[in-house]
Length: 318
Image (cartoon, rainbow, N blue to C red; front, side, top):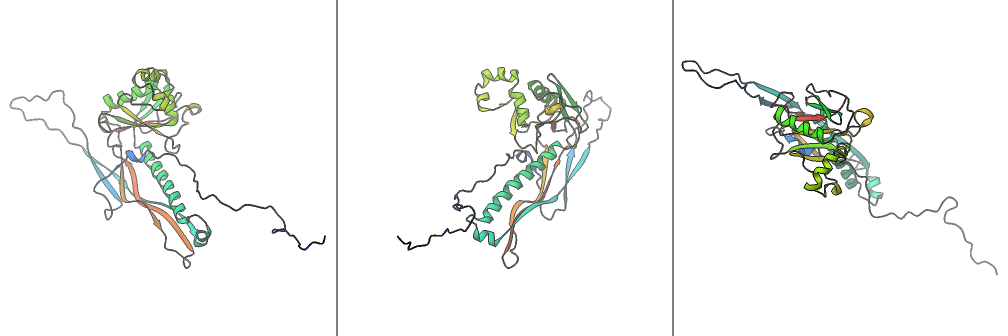
């Protein structure tokens, strides 16, 4: 039978593809941002206030052997020490350009996609900046576990040794006692200090038999839930942002970094809070961009190692 039709392919060559797309948009996850919430915005500073803020600090008076007076003798005088520290602000920001062409052809809203990505980036950059302040050399007190049952403290803003062990209950107890009885650090909230701890540091605590025995009776579900719990009036906050707190310090990367802090540790000077901004379209509306932008910076309030003034103990290593 003669053919009445001539059949041809709709594509001369190549691979046949399906161009159907899912209507759900997936995006990569980011590390949790935990550092910024423990930074105190400095009041009384903002726009039209110059490029820095000066924080005034009053040191404690010396304590004499006795405060008794002798009749006929003038009351002794003590000098009040007043010092200052300045935080200078900088501009911060990044942008993502896109075109109206890509927005018009894409099934997804390019502006919304860009804004979400920029917000995630902004949170991580701010979190890293806050962490850098907590860990800076201005935070003079450094602590290094030099063994399972030993720890070394430094007061010059530099780690005193190379870590040869991860954090454990012994180290936490020693740091707490040092903060309370030597440095007189006031609690961050209520009666509690705060420890921002890397996942590696947390694992060191949860693997310590002393921790397990303690929680066997006080909170049996803690291990199951992956919670450290409150230890020695210290509240622990796990940080999985490796750029904020490292999980591989010391010999063979044995130490997980941590920051123990009390009240008035780090301040944030803000002129403009980080915000999203859309660029004015260029090339007759074809060129577009979204950016985040802010004017701010972070600084340690008490950049000394003096008792009653230092507010941070940074667990680190050479």
